Image 1 (cartoon, rainbow, N blue to C red):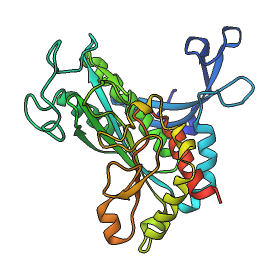
Image 2 (cartoon, one colour):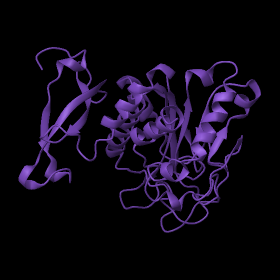
Image 3 (cartoon, one colour):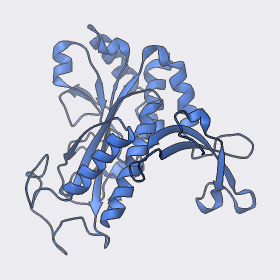
Image 4 (cartoon, rainbow, N blue to C red):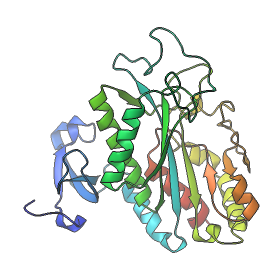
Length: 313
C-alpha cells in the first residue's frame, strides 16, 4: 500500500497456498483472502496494520474452514436486537519441552487453591508475558477487558468484550493471534486444549456471556429466562460446536456441568448456564454459557447462540 489504510475497502483480495494449510488440494491450491477487519500492528508500529481475512474457494464459495461467512448472515438478521457478547478465553502455558510452564521438572506444584487471581512467586507464572499481551491488544484496538491467573497454575484467562455481533469473533481471533506471537518471543507454547492435564486440575473453557437489548433493560429477566429455555432444547446441537475434546472437561467436576445434561442456575458454576447473582437481583442483564471449550471457533458459538435464542421460533 502506498498510503495509510483507514478502511477495509482500501484493501484488495489476496490469495495463498491452501494446500500447505490443509485448506485446498495441491491441484487447485489457491485460496482467496478477503479482508474482513483491520487492527493496528503492535509489533511493527507506525501505520502498519494486521488484517483479519475470510477464506474463499476459487468458485466464490466460503472455504470449509470459514465459519465467519455464515455467522455474518446470522448477525445481520439479528442486528435489531443488538446481541452483545463477552468471551472469557482460558489457556495454558507450556515450556518448549512440553512441560507446564513454571512447574517443577518431572513433578507437580501444590494442589489448586492459591493460584486463582494470585500474586507472588510460586503462585503465578509468566506474568510479564501476560501483561505484554494485554498491552499489545490495547494498542491493536482489540476490545480486551481484563486478565487473570486461573485455578490451575500456568493457566491464564483474558476477557474480550462486550462486542456486538460479528465483531466478537474478529476480536477474539486477533487476541489469540497476538498471544501466540508474543509467547513465541518468550519461547513459550500456548495450549487451547480444554483438558491439557489429566487429574485433579481444572480444564480450560471459553465462557460466553450473552445478552440482547431486551435483556439489558429493566424487566429483562423475562427474556433471559426465555433464552435459557430455548437453549435447553438444543443442548446436543450446541455441544457439537462447542469445541473438540470438550467431553474431557465437561465432567460435572472442576466447575463444570456434565456434557450429557443441561442445567441452569443463579451463581451456579456447575451449571450449563449461569445467571450472575447481581443479574437475578436487579432483574436484567445477561447470561453466561459455561459449556464452550477453550478451543472453540467463536463464530460458530456466537452464531448458534443467536440462531437458537433469536432466529428459531
